Length: 430
Image (tube, rainbow, N blue to C red; front, side):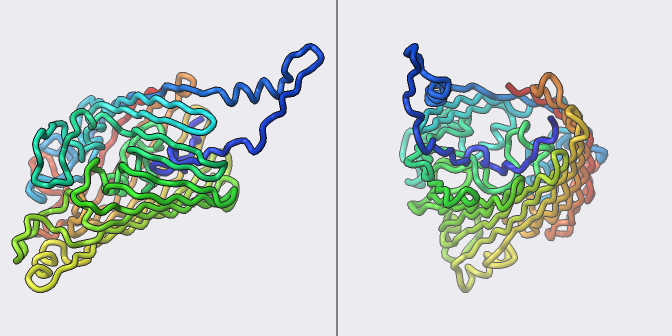
């Protein structure tokens, strides 16, 4: 049924706290010596389970601005040819593979194991923090050895141990808890991903604990290396936290946080007076709220809002250099997205997303103020295995501060402030 709600925010499908049975069914035996049906069912439930799942997705779309470069990234004149107007489904007028996933899961009464492997262009983009080379000697940054080999194929690899019916611990590489959308195409209502997703964290490696405070409130806290990279560039760790509240049936609220010291391994260089090769003395924090409400069996609404900022510890010429690059020694980015979808019947639905994202000072990746409107009408076939997603998306970006350059690209390679695309994604899951 296409009324699948997108309330399972990014990482949400992996963060659910499974409760153990509060009591065991007694070993009742009838006069024939056979176990009762209740005991049989309990025995089945306690058996370890191994599951295999995954999907493949592909897409084709057409941009009405016909960008000369053939990509939807933006005007090549912006930021030395490195705009990120469309991070994943970026090819125009091409049949393209998105992502191929194979996911193994093992689960028993006290633990879970997840090995989530992905391949393809979107897998590479989503795992951009892991290069595929291997450094066999000590790197310039002793904290970032880059001994990683084939780890770009690992989307998630973690285990969860349930210490009690309320408390569990997760260790390994896992999808971020930040945001509304996930990289998995079958889970999102829309195929193209929001700028809140594209500019937020994708994954972390570390440890976290979940505690069910009540049946309606769950807490999560943990430590991770940083954002979107297996290795940190210093010894400090970033803190992650989440408060989940279920105030009413069908109504979920996630309050999310991540923050740390010097935890951005992709931070742009700034020519400071101290001659530092990289900016190091700063903190970075991000606050995020995600909520969704299943109004009726067919109608769903959702919201995602985020605010993040850096705080550079600098003065004098260093502070001037940072402010020149980022507009302030405390530059920020923010965004909000509204979602709504309606299931017309078991086969077809229709949904819309409105988003505003502000990264005017190029603190993250897009480097502009962008407003987008997306309409998708997913069609579910083959007993739910095949999903076809026709989609119309309209993006409107403000000119960048650097010379007021128009953000997107037209058919002559010149700047334009709008980009409209129409296409379809084809997703098969098992």
